[in-house]
Image (cartoon, rainbow, N blue to C red):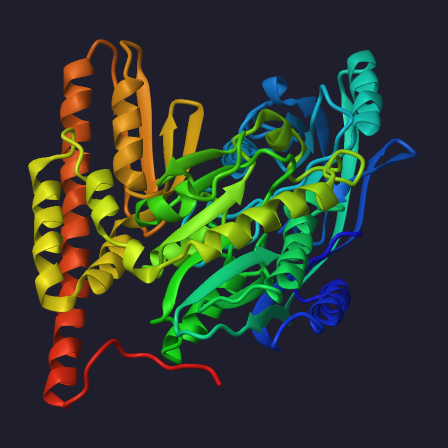
Length: 533
């Protein structure tokens, strides 16, 4: 399958195909129109003398024509307007950071490559470069990527002649458009609901990210029709997972799921959602399941041999984070922690030759059937979450929040406390220590990265930056042999983060408390919500 970008004809085509395949196996299908910012690459070339070399624009690079002297990254001349050959960082989520560092040195364009592999990679570059849910901009300079053959050709030319003048030409369209999220329902006999989600936009052929997910939804739909169960199933394929935010947010993932959950919340259609299962970036048959601690029993009864299960876990770049931020427990099935998967993810190697999507979909759908059948609302409780967040190394102020949350169960109910605590404690964050970048998303991400910073403290000079997706940022530079002061500073950062968590929890708790009293005074009971017919 070719590349699919939100808001383009390729997306309309895949939605029509998915709808046709699912229609005989589900009770209803709906499509949610989603406003997206569509980026469409049109042309890309690198010209040296009279010779043209092919390249691929990196989103969100805009139409431009740039001239400069071609150099390797280590040979950048500050302020000279060089065009730099830059190897993708080992953690390619940090590509935006590296591009901006080059821009600050006066680089006029960046050509990305993977030196040791016959692979072409693609990942969005944003401005600002650190993850945030705030509005952003396209990159300040054009960014393109090249395959191994072109890199070797440019490398040979550059080694022979150190002063090569090059022209990088990019053509791309950035426009407002409409993306499409497909929702298919299989009705159960009860009120509880489970969302099983993936996405259909992808780079290159996207066999593991995320054709596997689409095939899994279809396989699950076929199997589930033969099962008697109380739980209602929503099978969802999101638009604009890779990019498409109308605001060009630097955390460019998951706009489709954010918009979907916003619409569902406004219509009071999330109250009966037990949890979500997100399938994303599965390239081998032995994935890892990152799960909300409240789902411990559900996962434990269904886990296959050879699979890994991690409570909490890292949901960075995954739609499961969107559900957590909405207060809904989620589990993500992925292989991104696998070295092979990380190597081919977002690359031309993510194809049917390297990924057996049919075999993986069979494995995943079998797990999903068993998991959903084991889903009993009374077993999805907040108790396992308390065990997860009640570690001794967390500060006293944080333990006070947990204690207040536990006491709130008798006032607003354990389910409401589970939602509020999940929402309050979930965020994404970036930790930078000198040139090293660590990205994390999920429960207590800022606190976990603060602890990681403490473990990595040495005696050398340290630049430290902790950026929260919710907006707060902390940056420090520490001189040599100041280890104790670094730890004291980290402790103050943790205190500030805990203070933010406390404020957010109190706000959400009071909001729920007032709405509960309003319902009591109005003579209604139970959780607010609505059922689909």
